[in-house]
Image (cartoon, rainbow, N blue to C red):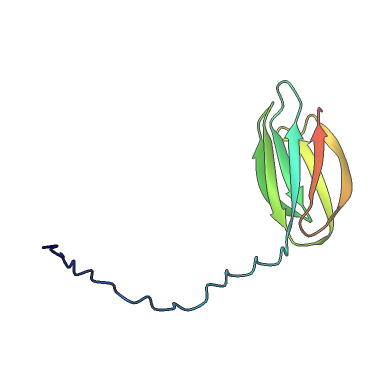
Length: 103
């Protein structure tokens, strides 16, 4: 006689989850200004549109996040020696503008 074995298999039904839609990437609304101090011994004070943005030590660099637009940048030695001539930079959303000063 042939014996049959019955196996009970328990299947669970699948349920459809909500559709996953990733969050859209946020629109870039700022740009960046990268300033490098190429001097050998001058600590440089950074002023952007008349506001103090701190200092950069020799051989170092700093990046500043700014809204798009035109800015006046001044880089001068903290002891009033060294630095570079003031200049204007136009910041573009999503882009980095890079400048260095060796004075």
